[in-house]
Image (cartoon, rainbow, N blue to C red; front, side, top):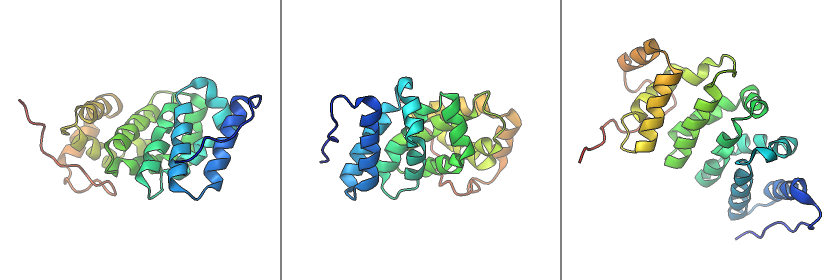
Amino acid sequence: MAQKPKVEPHVGRLGYLQALVTEFQETENQDAKEQVLANLANFAYDPSNYQYLRQLQVLDLFLDSLSEENETLVEFAIGLCNLCSDRANKEHILQTGGIPLIINCLSSPNEETVLSAVTTIMYLSSPGSGSHPELTAMPVVQCMLRFSLSANTRLRNLAQIFLEDFCSPSQVAEARHRPADSALGIPLPRTEAPQQP
């Protein structure tokens, strides 16, 4: 298990975050990388850290980690969904090619990663984000239709909200009439509806 970075008490939050970023970049140990990325993801919950996280390019570190083979790193990296409520962070993600990386997370075998990816797509699709049609492209809408049938209540509810709030009725209708296997690049979940007790 990785040790917490040794930081002098007077260094403060920025120094501590810098030590985490440096440790992530320098370590070869996967467990240490996971722990550091989890720590950085925890800092993403607090808006008072956003300026520091931008300054240290942690958003880019999260985006780069989304394409890792290690599913645990991807799960912690998609914690960037917590940063999307901030306009500057949202714009950075949209302008640096983050959308395809986030959409790819919809096919993760890890449910928490998928839930965070759906949430991130919703945050990025919110008003004031400008036009980003890839967020509601047909493969994404088809994937959300499948997720709306999920046995996982949280995933089912998020997908239904996405379809109702971020897609036009015509997009949903078109997705319903396309072949089920046409959600290009996004392996779809099973189609059975949840069992009713």
